[in-house]
Image (tube, rainbow, N blue to C red; front, side, top):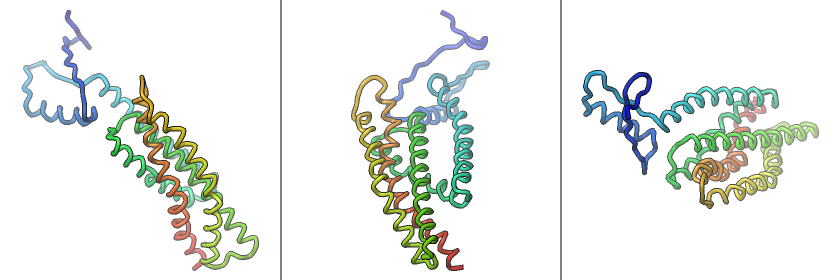
Length: 232
């Protein structure tokens, strides 16, 4: 049978990949083919299949992710009425992905669309952690100000300590719910579970670092930024 595409005769070469990602294999294969393969005139080659789908999704993600981050930043500004606090939450999001990166490395998962979806979901949860933490910190400071006990850096530290401590129990409950809810997916097997594992893995790993980030790092950054106003 003669097969054609776009008015040209074609022939397919099927490749099964194991132990590496599609993108890495394509990069290595293209380097070898460009250096060693000599094609006759009017002959050419191209990569199709899952690689084409990855390119399309990658192009869409490059447009959607910046737009989503921009919308989140605007919503944070409207919530807190401060670009500084909105920037503080956005700046902490990459650090929340440390746990997911380590778990993906330990599980030997390659970067894929499913993993990217899981990381986007984790970034959303980490942003929610940061929002709630800042709300508690701001409320603790307002309470101190209402009692006329907010004058020094020590007063700021006390307010931040009170606000952060109030978040320990609800945060532990949220983390436990997400963690134990995703464990059956990580342990399961069957049709489609391999894709679900790659979506759940970033969330499971991120539930270790994201809570620590909001409980310890975020109050410290808050202190470093706002103590200058009291000292001034």
